Image (tube, rainbow, N blue to C red; front, top):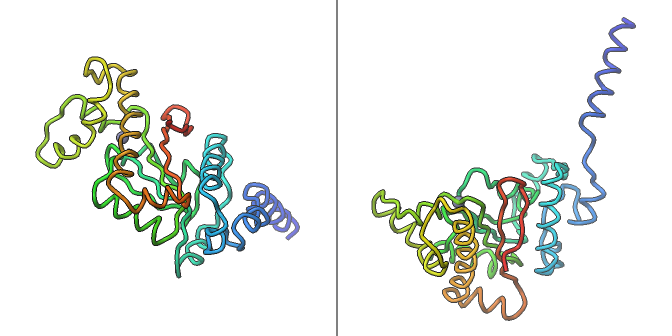
Length: 239
Ligand SMILES: [Zn+2]
């Protein structure tokens, strides 16, 4: 009997030290509810700059391996009746770029649009317009990443049918802008195309979406470019 009791006490001790309760106080302070999800109020209070800071801070927690403790079932439940995401992020489909994870975001925090090479088309633009003009997100981020396979394939003029040709064609304007030999084995050249492709995509978003450009002019949203380093997990801004 005695032995059994001490085993239970030991197990309880291990459970408590191995799985500390997440800081509800921290989440209450930032989001105004005990499940830590975005609400209409918390979204309305955020500025575009505050959203950007929040994402960059989340990336610091990610690289430091100190993510916030998220109660997933509680967030699932709390977001079931509506969503008030703070940002819309356009990323490549690359499996090594887990968007919510690398910014340490929970359920209902960010919209994520993904397409190989992270370029816009009508559907992506429509999604971004919905995210900002309808759902109230304050930040549009275009996130490129190191050693992007889509960018390399575009540089190589990889051929695999009409659909791939269309996709890779969207990266062509960035390739045209970068000086130097068209060579996917030249890392420096590839990285330059990846960053120019992010800038090109942002220019295109402004040009092709009067709705998003208008919101930006009014100061209601911000559009930023960013780059994800596969080696370190760090995100840096692309000017
Ligand atoms: Zn990629």
